[in-house]
Length: 57
Image 1 (tube, rainbow, N blue to C red):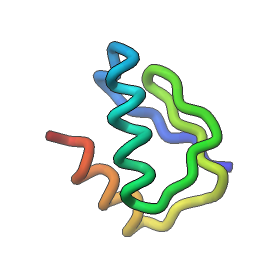
Image 2 (image 1 turned 90 degrees about the vertical axis):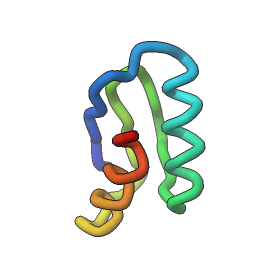
Image 3 (image 1 turned 135 degrees about the horizontal axis):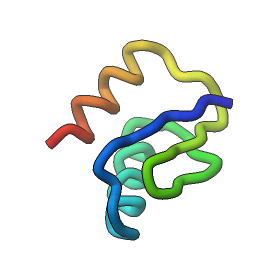
């Protein structure tokens, strides 16, 4: 498993947006809570970069 920490997640809508973006990128999240995402597998540096670019705006 791989845990990602995401800044500025402040409400349930943030969780929904992160979940939707993960699905678009083909990443499977085991658990999402404010500020933290637990993925079912390790992600590559390219996947991490794509996720970062997607969530920054």
